[in-house]
Image (tube, rainbow, N blue to C red):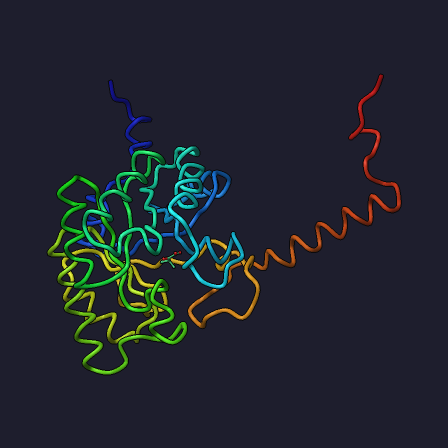
Length: 275
Ligand code: KIV
């Protein structure tokens, strides 16, 4: 049975993202790592939630995403899925859980989808990831690619640096984007590349390109929850725009609470139980 209300709650699918790109409608992807954040995003016009392995840095306190485990990802993905968001939920396969090839990638992706209830997985890399993308898609698991500054390769890059600055590297990124789409990836994240290269990739790709630090000429933009809300500590990469300074808002609130406790004005009679 279907009603107008059910239709309004229809979950976002990978086909909706393709349709948005075809209509030239830019969309947003945001990271979330818990049910509270996912419930806030629900009802807002955010069609994709990424349970990113950035959780290693913004939630778990690591310096890079490399220590994040599959169990960490499943744990946080479950929390996001429990909020029953309308958005498509995509989960990062963390470092070491797919690099051995298609068999390992499939085993990890099946665990993520089965144990968390998420819709899709994301993995990093171009040509070298293509056999794994094919294997996952053949198994019915939607896959998002990730090119440019792929944080799991930060040591190889020598730090968090802009990628694709010379023509050889730029051409490889364009070829990789085409190869990922041909292998069946439904979208590709493009991180920290010159804006002109991002425009080239977007023109060459047959699937939505979701930029982060990739300029405006892409199909969609993604930012990390803690960055967009001003929760993460400085310094930030230049592509971050914080729309609110929640670190300060929270500090002010906690200071006010502490002051109220110290001077005895919290709790009030209304905040206490009678006999
Ligand atoms: O892990 C993550 O949050 C990501 C986004 C920055 C794209 O991969």
